[in-house]
Image 1 (cartoon, rainbow, N blue to C red):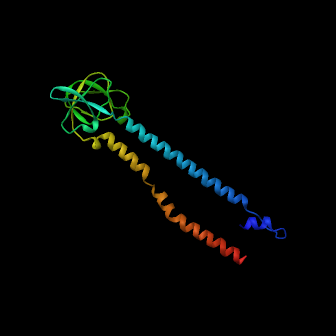
Image 2 (tube, rainbow, N blue to C red):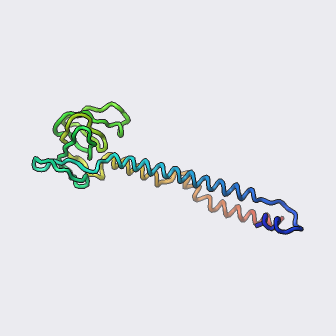
Image 3 (cartoon, rainbow, N blue to C red):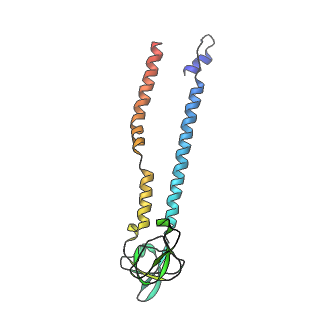
Amino acid sequence: AYSTYITVMPNVVGEVYFDTVTNLTFVILIGRYLEGMFRHQALSATKRLMELQPRVATVLQDGEEQIIPIRGIKLGDHVLIKPGYKVPVDGIVLEGHSAVDESMISGESVPVSKTVGAKVTSGTVNTNGALLVEVSTTLQNTTLAKIIRLVEEAQSSKAPIQRLADTIVPWFVLVTLLSAAVTFFIW
């Protein structure tokens, strides 16, 4: 308003500060752009984690294979995991021998051998042999579900410095505006 007044009034001499407004707007817009970009990257990371979970599983019921949605799997069910398929839930191997690619959990690229009594984790990939697995955890308590939940919590929570800034900024703006007003009227 001051810069506009100086510009419009022909007899008034003074400095104009349009560049400050432009710089402030630029910094705010860049901050919002970066925040949006990072939020989008975090959401796509969560989506990629969710894609590790298969949608259906082969469950043995009364000696017959039935393909059911993983939401229908209950504790104690026996799940058949064929070669090349993803492990749908956490469980314990009852029958079979295979190597399981656990790189999504451990980062290790070499498949881990699994035999009777070994634990398997949801989202990992059975590479070469069939496994019969007894479900040991519910879908919402699998290792993969916990990882997804932790990533979502990390995305939604604020860092301590950000919380501090959020509480200080309104007061800082108020003090700055009051100081500017007092300075203007004294000057």
